[in-house]
Image 1 (cartoon, rainbow, N blue to C red):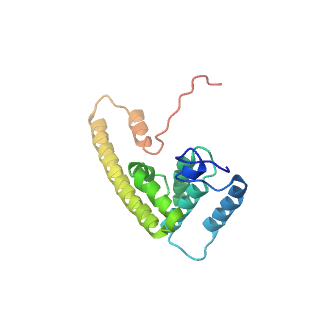
Image 2 (tube, one colour; image 1 turned 90 degrees about the vertical axis):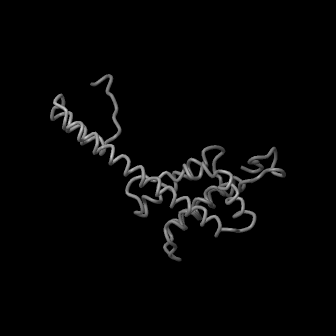
Image 3 (cartoon, rainbow, N blue to C red; image 1 turned 60 degrees about the vertical axis):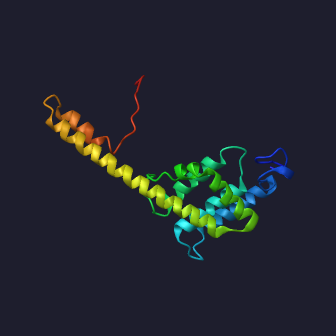
Length: 180
């Protein structure tokens, strides 16, 4: 990716120029070693913040780095046992504060300001976690209300009730249009 200019017409006036293509594989390998290294012991959320910033700095793809970088956050939260399910939407916080997000990443690269980045990231985690908690409570309340309405209805049979109870555990459905 030599000479790729991000937010500029050429490397000389770009906001960011990622590493040359011939360095990307080695940089990703270094990042992977850091992910699996247990010393020094860092709090997992701090480590995820560092990994995300490093991935975005390596910038290995022409498109999709942001999406993959945010997916990496979710994968590491699950891998390190911080979340059993991807219920926290940190991407929303990063998108809502996109200018500050880019500024923080830029400050890492230009000034080595990792502390401000980690503080920004952890604030986003706290806000996203609170949002997720509110959503879970809201959904649970809605499910309880709907359960009472369902049980009170004389038109609902046992199969409908069983389906209603299964839905929260398996919210994804597909239709088979051409069964074999």
